[in-house]
Image (tube, rainbow, N blue to C red):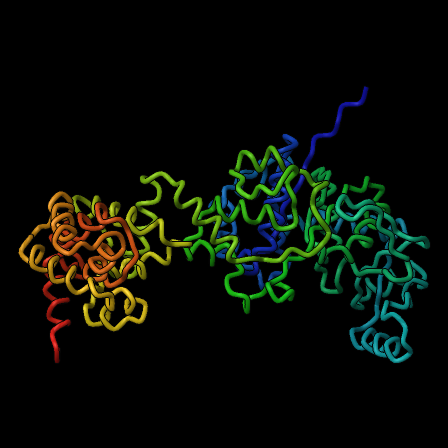
Length: 504
């Protein structure tokens, strides 16, 4: 009985820029498939574009993948049985295979200049023909072509596409067929000696025993050329799965005009990695059974199935990502979310860079106070305005407070609160509750008529955190040496009453 082949997949990014959300979705699907099947996930760096590739981009993409929670079994930093894992270190392998193909007359030297090829293309378009290579150099005598090359004439190497349709199976799209006339003979090595993507990817996937090629559907048109190469080299063809394009809300291809598009962007915004992983998994994949949307990492691995990946384009919904992020922020343990949130407040100049002692403990309580009200952690500094940027005149003039401040009882409640709280420093939660009971008895106000005016006095808005959490943060913060002074309750009350006076 044959032993089943171990699943091996790869993610092969080019280090030419930041890791785009479409690419990282591809990485995630490969990783989920490998982990679900107990296979191997390989990271390979495709850096044959020497002009655009940079070490800093490779470093960043590795960091971004690790931040997201993806790990790999083989790669440039961990090694493996099929190293090296950078294409720039595999040039000899590519040259050897290319010469073998030429020697077996499955590939040939092409001496056409760029100008000749452009004239061919323009003529084909003018005659309303498909602009594919004419095959002019295919008919050259191999011995003559070798002599011309040795003599120093510039020559690329082209693969001979077979005289039959090229077929392959796609897990997402089913059986796919390309007519050979539509493919033409692709260049596999340029005249400057540099191998091209469609060639090296086949050599590497075959050498690394890749069983499934999972990638974006922008590579679908490359696949017949690659299948032809597998056949020319006498190699087995892997399974393919081409993932749908990710579109923006306007149904155009996702790009920078839609906002954040890279892992680094989302990381800087304060999106948690588990939220991004959860959301990306739902882009083009439908879990079985119901409309459930929250999938922690372990459950994603258990549920993932390539057969449930849809060929339809996926729409990137930022609000849904934010909804998931809000869920994971609320679920995060305090020891994790406190330093993350405090870092955003420190970058905004609201906290000192070094947090220790009393300030460290207070910053954690501040994050606890504000985090339930944000979609992403970079919103914390703005939300912290209720603590650091209290402005009584602004609170009085804010349109959203007009209804609260216009009720008959609001001025009575505010005046009663001011008489009692103006001299309380610090104001404790116990004393605050006692004051509110006294005001209720004095004014007969209750519910929102009682609490909303007091909240406007304390934070400049009629909605916000619970008083039993808010007041200790305000009072403790006012006693700390912070970059921005926190006004305590009595300061806020006095400022508010002064702003209410006629002519102030």
